[in-house]
Image 1: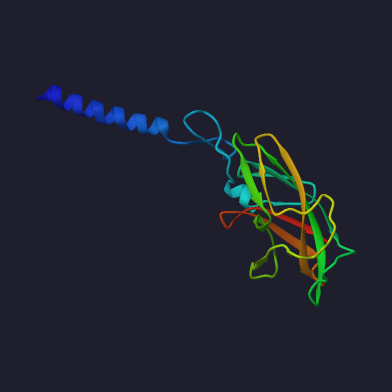
Image 2 (image 1 turned 90 degrees about the vertical axis):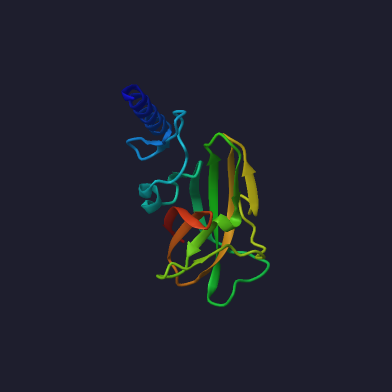
Length: 178
């Protein structure tokens, strides 16, 4: 009878150790390593709270995202709404994951007011941008994409907070002046 209990306890302990060895482990930098030893790309709490400026590389969700410039548009086909002006925001996105990544124009939104409300890009402005505007892109591992989006922002707004969204949640935050 004693041997039977020792065997059962050994199986329980072995199962527990197996489960622990398969659980993701956190590195000192806050990244999560799966049992295979590779890193799972994803924002840490520190990354979610950090705010990146123009030209700074932000890393999250398997992507390196840099806002390369933000400038007021001087020419367009369809004028902005009253009290607004067009601002062209340019992005560089590099896929640092091991699999194909997709980004869309609606993944980049700016914060409108103190309540945290966000607005997306303007669809039919006729603004010429360099690099060109985009709607959505699929980026292969190791590849880089550059594109611009046009936003109809309030004229009085000087400081811009831009969010990169993943599954409708803020994954990365950027702040800069227009």
